[in-house]
Amino acid sequence: MKPQVIIIGRPNVGKSTLFNRLVGKKLALVDDQPGVTRDRRMGDAVVAGLEFTAVDTAGWEDEDPDTLPGRMRAQTEVSIEGADAALFVIDARAGLTPLDEEIARWLRTQSVPVVLVANKAEGAAGESGVLECYNLSLGEPVALSAEHGEGVADLFGALWPVIGEKAEGSERAGEIEGEEEEDGERPLGPLKLAIVGRPNAGKSTLINRLLGEDRLLTGPEAGITRDSIAVDWNWLDSRTGERRDIRLIDTAGMRKKAQVVEKLEKLSVADARRAVDFAEVVVLLLDATRGLEHQDLKIASMVLEEGRALMVAINKWDIADNASSLFNGIKGALDEGLSQVRGLPVFAVSAKTGKGLDTMLHAAFELRDAWSKRVSTAALNRWFDDALEANPPPAPGGKRIKLRYITQAGTRPPRFVVFGTRLDALPKSYERYLVNGIRRELGFDAVPVRVVLKSPK
Ligand code: GDP
Ligand code: GDP
Image (cartoon, rainbow, N blue to C red; front, side, top):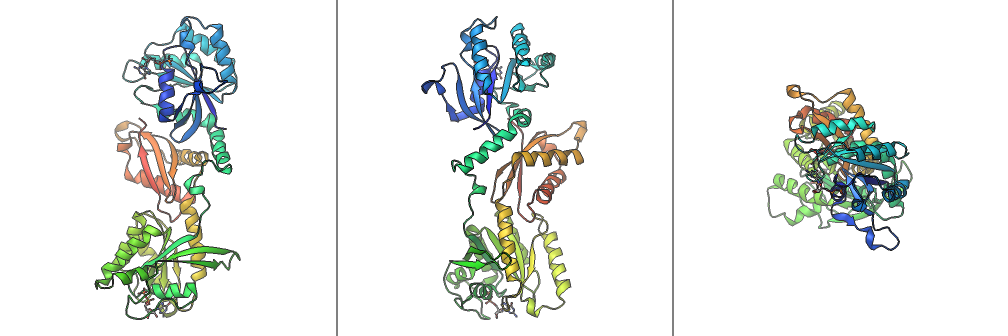
């Protein structure tokens, strides 16, 4: 069950307008269902990713606006019983009325947590009304304009501490029932893996080795490969003893089709681009005897820009000179050349001898897990609060930039939305601070993470 949030307040403060704003298109009129009171409307509401059932207590309007009629109180008492929070709406333009104060007095005797909402707060006309609200002893009001949509997302900050846990719980319950699966939590199918790299890096040899059969022709002339696109196989993870399904995207095979075009350097980027469309994890294969070349960085950047999980394997390790300085040199150059990720996983392998391949595949599964992961809004905001406290956003021109909360908007690749105000003034360096924190502290190392900044409307 989603948490229930009841909207209460005297007539004309904007309860219905707020309800419609919260519920949006998903409005479900409960009137049509038998056995439900005609005076209540319920709907699926969402504020910045926080989901709850909004209950509008419209219908009381018919009553005498200057008193709190018994019928209204009875109604409210019924509604409030099942509620996890109450949004108590006042009209900031009109200021507090005796009826508002009476409702506030009554609310203070109730056990439901109350969030005070100063509606109609757009422009300057609502300012004094917002201040008056503090006199109700119901905490800090959320100033907003239901009609114009301004400040409505700020309700997240006030509602989250009250109903956040239950909202997360209901999400999980929904999953168990299989009603509403998040993309990231769907059971992951075969690992879709692509091996890309310059001609002669050893892609065909590697694929042959992995599949354990001579299904691709390899040779010094790049491009002699058979035409398959995807090969399913079942890999025995020697670390865990588990058998795991892998769908290998055979880009070398794809290349053959375009073989007539002789510009092979160009071709390997095109191959990679096609492979990336299919793949979850992309292995960029380097040739240890050639090191990291510009072309490799170009492929790596493209893979990350497409939001795929990337790892690097340095092949032909069996004939590498100066192994440890080669390895560190390549790792350093990758970190320097690719600003999108930190600590890209790099493996030394030999397609010829099989060295390092199990370790690489094991890591590929782990990388996909991170790439597909969803962090609960609760954990995310705990981290967020700490990060802001440790290093508060700057105050350019003496005005603070307010960052209010963060939600994960998607997975594969992970996408996050940070809500706040004055975001245009937020320096890039601060954005990087947040992105690095997400990577390091929430387990998204080496995954291309997207962060979008949004001002609530
Ligand atoms: P309810 O009786 O509490 O449900 O109030 P309504 O939602 O019916 O709104 C009462 C009146 O206030 C309507 O004319 C709305 O258009 C107006 N109203 C609602 N929200 C706002 C707001 O944010 N700003 C202004 N200026 N008017 C609003
Ligand atoms: P592709 O163009 O990327 O598919 O590369 P190939 O698989 O055709 O390999 C190019 C050349 O490198 C071939 O002569 C392979 O035998 C050789 N090669 C591939 N992997 C290794 C390796 O791990 N060690 C060594 N010594 N040679 C390799």
